[in-house]
Image (cartoon, rainbow, N blue to C red):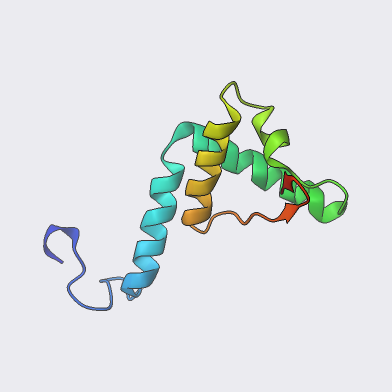
Length: 96
């Protein structure tokens, strides 16, 4: 594997190129300190939500933990979604 590139459909560990790309995308998304914090808040909120369906983290709830604009939070969440690390759903005007 010269230069760290996968030469065929499988990497040296036996993972497919698609799997490796997915892991790389996840690490890239989580390499930003703020994004990692947002991911952690969402993860912890989802854990609480599994105990009580009424408590689900909304974008506004997550944003209240950070001193950055709501549009910046939304951008970070979009990057986490693109890396398949979080899923969002809309309920009325609220995004969960």
